Image (cartoon, rainbow, N blue to C red; front, side):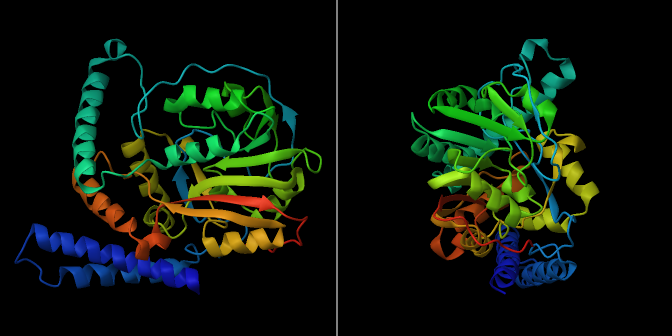
Length: 372
């Protein structure tokens, strides 16, 4: 009931912000704009709950939504096949920031691609200017996750990265990823998708497998991590139990994932798949092959607490965080989104922030948990 209430509250609050902004932009028009918008969004939230997609109450195997993964890896779900992946290098990444993915040298691009790149650069300049005024202290969530990794990866660490995909961090942080991977005693990357493992350039020891049956002995690792992976888990009870099993006593499980109560996750659940795919291609330049099913079955504080208790883990740190705007290339939407992100920074709206970084510590073997 807590999640249901917060979900509906999130939509109503977001609708009110949209209505208020519309009223400020066009004074004298639609005096009931805020109320109408909030009512419509509240109805949308209720419909989402009734559809069973909002709170992870979907039937087994039924994805609750689809998200893009800006690290380019595949979800780790649904297979027990194992194989060792060869250490095949991948072409270099590049520099930049969220949404600024290198597309190659400008001089080598076709004229149409250069025009598109020039337009994107101009739109990003508009976005950075708006962000500097509205939310000057906003940081991209991947940078916050990177900070957490730095504080937990030491010289003697035995580290397992789950769903490692093409890379641990976004491609524009390639050098920083290399520095982190060089630090621990052992680092192992696990993913089900073999082509992704073959393209991974920083982790030398890579294993093809899934999180339901980890191919490691008990107490093998000091640290397990998952960057934008937990939302893809179809059976988090079993998968968290496996993570607990392979961790040493006192070992930590750190993950970065969307917040199920965040506006992006809510929109992803309600939007039809064709619309989602078009938006992903428009805003992020990704094909349908890079849009993966997401279940959001371990993406709220209450669910994480339940899973932790049942699998012998203790929540050491739970951080709802705010990330950059998804609609950065669409200035009117980016403006509305930045205003909402500015409100999410306040304490009352903390449960509705866009992302979660959690640090769980192993205390015992655990008792098991029902999936859902």
